[in-house]
Length: 486
Image (cartoon, rainbow, N blue to C red; front, top):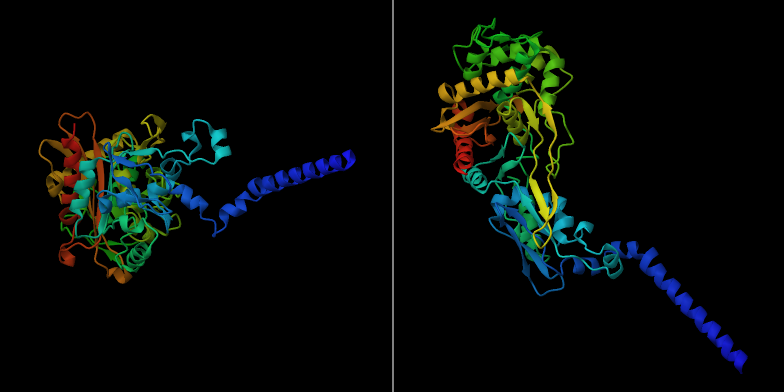
């Protein structure tokens, strides 16, 4: 009898070992495949069983969480959703996450291992930590000024702090409210279908994901290349520039809106925005040096992240001389995001130094202690400091006596450059109105803000569209908002 009991013990022990081995196989070896199975709702239930961390602007949360009392318990909510959508993106139970909601998802959802006080215990229990917060660099008043300035228009605004690269405003219009996308019901599906069917593409982030021909605002880059390379040594001396200017190797003649561009100095040509002078300068500088200067500002960089990716601004490296002439006035294949052109203005204001832009100041734990900070940003010298000094003088001329008068701010130094960019088949599209600028308060040691504005659907007659008329007032409102703050 004892022998049979012993055999039964061995058999039971074997069954127990087999049970443990099978449990380990299911929970360890096969766990990833079960997690990926569409029929497994446990990961989603776990993900939404607690409130999501918040995205903060000026110390105030612009996101929140709503308790639905359903299986996927907490839905995302947004304050001033359309104004901040180009920054926050959306967090949807049906369609995933975008922009900061995506790049900072680990912190916001509580999945980041840095949030776990006892990581090994969490791995064992599969518990999820409370979500942390993301503190942005945005300036609330500047963001609101940019948003209100573009109200009813199609376009974008990007504003930077030149000395650090902190993004102060990032607006795209038309925008959308991320709130209706948050849930998982039919209302979210209808909102998704409506937004994707809208021909104005409200979910396109025009400030960082759309590139435009920069038009005459690119003359800042061309002027920097001409001064740095020594092609121009005296920017106030007359140039040997015909009007009209025949593009090299062609019969095409380039003309100007102004009648005073023939042989104008670089300083005068910059204020008058003379195409002929700058097209000829680009050819004289040459493709190699023009490309080097454009790339020093950030063109042709496909790896810029803020932390979500920024579309690559381009300056063509395979140009003949006629194409180079057009590229040097911001046409042909030259394309730029508004954020890239804000970087150009910021570099001029910052003594020729380019700071890579960033949007997240720091991330914090639920209790408010710092989890991670932005850290120092890469610096590169795009141009000689002396070149930046001369460019600042030229940009101030544009605001004080040129087409950028509507950007002037009493008691502040303001520099700018207007631009009107042709596009479409045979340049048949409504021209884009551009303005890039920087501003320095009367008590400031350096410029505090650099701005780029593009308006796609300028409301003037085609021949009267200008960056100075359509985009400069928006830039002024953003710059004033920053300068008025302590």
